[in-house]
Image (tube, rainbow, N blue to C red):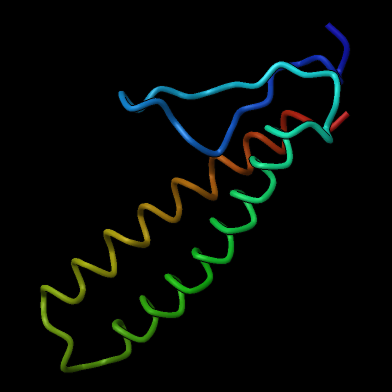
Length: 93
């Protein structure tokens, strides 16, 4: 399989949480563009979650509930970012 025909890890999972892959020879197809757009949105969201988590951590009055919420969102964002890194790393030739 050539580099352009390798499977691309997509930035979403199945309803059961299993990874989804795309087999294509074009990086410009409809699903590839959708995946690129979703990755960009996930990275933007991650930046917002990071800013919110930092705000909670610097707030001495933030309670356990706020800290737990911030940590849960940060963990979700980290999962997204790691999936993007693996996907992009797999496409480096």
